[in-house]
Length: 210
DNA sequence: TGCCAGGCCCTCTTTAGGGCCTT
Image 1: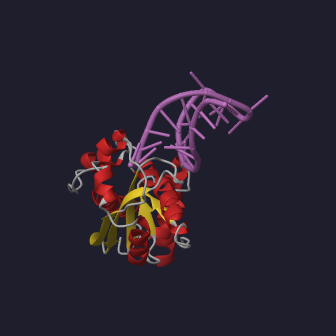
Image 2: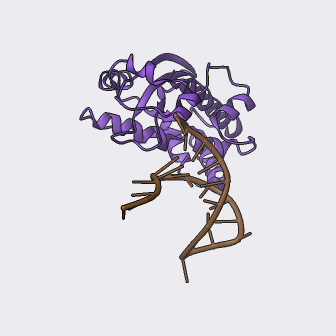
Image 3: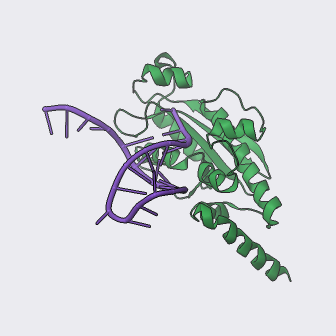
């Protein structure tokens, strides 16, 4: 996969963005030419309280957030870092709603689509024991990216998984280079129809060469 | 007043229910 894609991950203090529920950390792993070429990570202070269960899960404490830069500064920097690069995340519906919410507080709006490594791995790696990011990383023997449930480590794990999914597609279906638009299309095809869809795509690519 | 996620996917489905996945 040669295309540049920004793989993002948020740590948050809950699951539904709003006045009391905000992002606490963002990590971005920038993928290009089949590898991670750039990284962005920062804690962010949005003035929200992190419950003990989530402090324990992420290792991000209320004290750490009090010392962190303001959320609006971090998000402005993150938005500049990502620019118009196509986005990806593991369970993108989660990260997308926080990305959109945090941008909206800056008066900004997302212009690009999200590819989802959860939806894609359910379709392309059905033999995996489950489709949690950590399980897939261990199962596929992907590189150790650091402490799970920290934003950059999770973003790097998702980036490695995205590259694996691209390689799997190219190897199994002998497709020309995989791009973000194809991944977004694939995640909308139902799991049962994804293989016929790819075989059809393969035959059309072979036809166009011949 | 009290409660509070939500999108995706499978199946014992579609007039629904429950599990997965993210923090």
